[in-house]
Length: 173
Image (tube, rainbow, N blue to C red):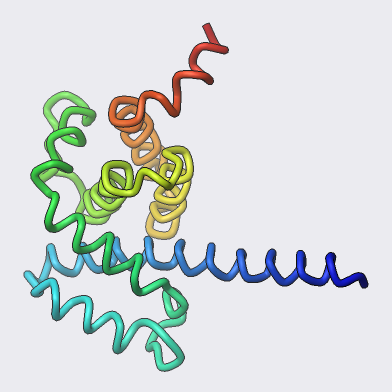
């Protein structure tokens, strides 16, 4: 094996590890917001609890053990701090008669995390955000819920990041 292909392989492996850590951080963020919703847990205490008991080698559950703590903290803090910016666009995309506070807590947490990323992390492509959170929804649900998450996020992403969809939409026309 040449040095170049060896380095490429190492980069791909490192990139894959980082990708898994980001995906696990997103899943953990949804879990954390769900926990906050049910137990009214303090934000700082919640982040500390996840860092101490759910992440790392001593994690009680391996599902999110390798999560990126910095990304997890950024998402959870961002959702809490920007909830007034996050909720109205989501509410506007729900079916008539439905409000964000009436839908399932896990779906609400999933949509809020994704919306924070759409608003607060412009370096992450909108389609990547949508795909990541549809996968998060699939971790919790086997029915139509992931499709609902996909539909709501697609609509809201087109409104908050229209330039990312403009070229593809123009090709369809």
